[in-house]
Length: 135
Image 1 (tube, rainbow, N blue to C red):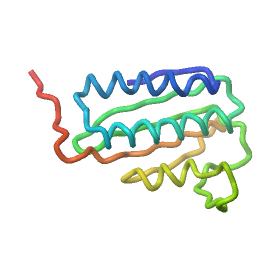
Image 2 (image 1 turned 180 degrees about the vertical axis):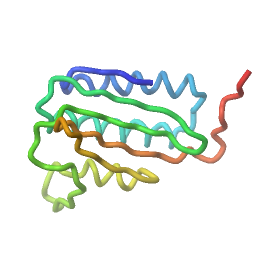
Image 3 (image 1 turned 90 degrees about the vertical axis):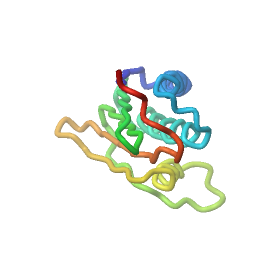
Image 4 (image 1 turned 135 degrees about the horizontal axis):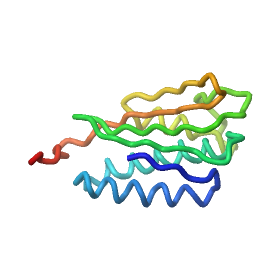
């Protein structure tokens, strides 16, 4: 599934709603898996909105055998490369990619030639979540 939304804070709940519907369609009802998917999605989308100079961002999600994949692409514009920070206890922000790293089987980022940025994560499917039957 691919969708493109305006880089506005109110787009994050829209992303979560779209992904909930996609998870339902994939028959992924495990609460832990859904929670992690929505947490990672929210963090990646929020970072794209907060740090990109672009007016839109693109989210792509898909499922492989044992993983759920999330990819968020923005138009860049930030001088910094997305990286995990370790803020002190008194800081209110800066934990997003740390949460992504802790919640994911793997994650990464790339800066494109056009200064766009793609950040991705792969989350393990919980035990007991089965592949949909194919006709």
